Image (cartoon, rainbow over all chains, first blue to last red):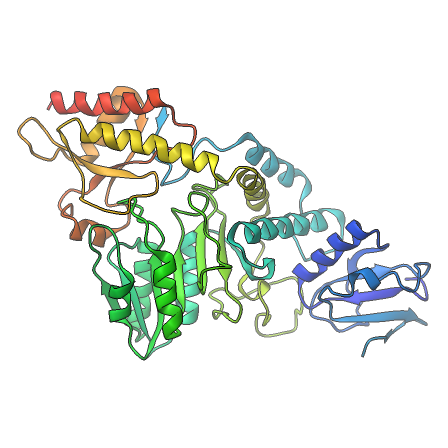
Length: 82
Length: 379
């Protein structure tokens, strides 16, 4: 995974697919990936937002249920919304 | 064939249902377990199905549990919400999908009151009279699968809500046949199959739960995530969805729901019109004896065919004659609803049940009536 990428995690699988649907509809870049082992989350799917995405790329999806947002750097994930 | 057994399962299914199932078999994997293409395709199918089901019932997609049948949903709700020491209320109009889970609960120490119906309906006053301080569930069908009578759901729900008692509804015969808007009716749990008036495939079902209602799981197992947890997830819908779901089935149900929501009134009205034609035609024969009911409202027509001496012809014999003489498919017997037959006088023999669908033609109905007459005349 590239440095600077964001990972959005979810409590439930249904939330992950709802997020994907809204992202596709809203033109938000990224895709669903298996939850990286460096992150503890309830759902086994996560949304990967490329590092090149605009800083406010997730803003249209702020109302959707999610568990956490992490930034990947140096093989670690730092939680941004804790 | 003249198919008049839609209350058992609808036939024919729309072409789009089968096509969606075949496509899912080719394209869909195990949802929520991986992020490769087939797994994601399966997850998208389930999400789409939940959303359409939520639209159908005026509920939130998060509160739609995908099940294998109405029976499974009812078991989830009944076994998951009742504990020893509780009291439950049901009616004598119920299918065994309600009665047997309640009898099983009774064996675990749940007290049970069975309210007696009158002419095929149970009134809100009768339900209210059965409630106790320890009542934790009222469980009843929206429409009888034998009599075709529709219960006054709004009024019963209001009684339950006023007393703080969860109402569990068996909508097996009404999902897709009658509007059910849970946004306006305080129902704790509603269960239905996907394969009757919704015209989806067998092996699919829906359990819709109100906010704050979370039955204990009946099945526990894999969910695709949180693998080291020793218990099921706390949140719906996954809390009640252990194991790999029937993705091809839900792809078919998704297609069926799309068709239904595009025209929610037309097909049910056609089926009911066919049933009304049949009901009137049989009543005019002079050899048809049907329970005296009020509130008939779904396309189910049950009764007995009498011989020339006025005796009931074995309903199984009638069903076989209908099939052999004219390829007419009906259901005879007790329809898994024993207390209905005990109450309405058909415990000894059962009844013959005709259940037309939206594609049933007037000619098919007339053929059924003529064949019943012929069976009578040959008796």
